[in-house]
Image (cartoon, rainbow, N blue to C red; front, side, top):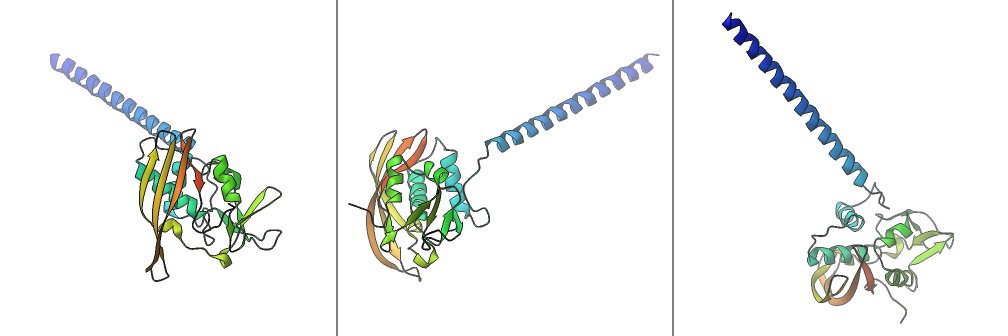
Length: 222
């Protein structure tokens, strides 16, 4: 009799453990789904060409849309140098697609120029970009709310890949002034010229933006 009771108690204990394990598995599964849903909600739509976007460009742009508070100065400067110069690289197809503009000169159309520049430039920085001249003509062209830039026929050097060093000459929580050295290279990757340019970054709403940058690839009004 006692043996039967012990067997019954053991069976009930095992059943209870099994039910507890099933409940734990359900809870863990629910937590995984919740985390996935949160990640999906946090994903942002980027104004890029998903078919041609380069991994480094994608990572740098995502950082602009979802800023990381723990970044180092080096990471910030590298990212902003890369993105600020990539816009002037006529061969790029990360932010635009082939499409003839009404003026017949600018044959690359930005996907979402306003959205892109909102995450890359301050108001002053954007006006500077819009004033850029390349090869004696405006680099950008706007018509009916659509923005275009010069195409591959007006190829500019790949300055976004050529930063060699930098020095932060002024910095606080909302402003950074950086002197950047770069090496110009030929098609065989030989250094043909070394120069420096200053970039001023401003922080707005937790995001670092270009406030002042006269890109080497362009000319700007005095």
